[in-house]
Image (cartoon, rainbow, N blue to C red):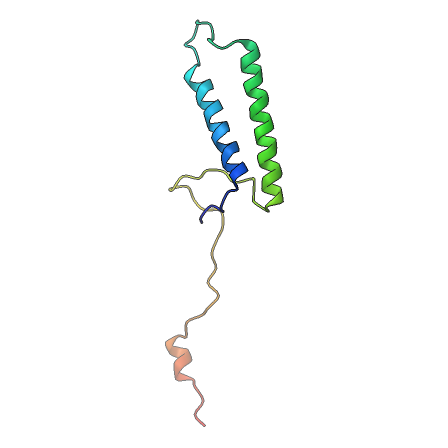
Length: 100
């Protein structure tokens, strides 16, 4: 299944979210060390991420996109079952044809 085309705003929001989470990840201190970012900056990053997520949700609903999508591993069993709707004739069926 391919991903639907994103609008420019959606691409910008995704990039901003990726950059903010990368900054948070890259500046995370080891245990026992003080965080290099101030508490106010950390709080602002969290608020930005909440606003971005909210806007992404609004845009997804506007464009009719499913926002409940979750990553799935290749070896993870699929939850849907495909049922074939065509029935192949058997040998028994082919011998019972009417001759007129």
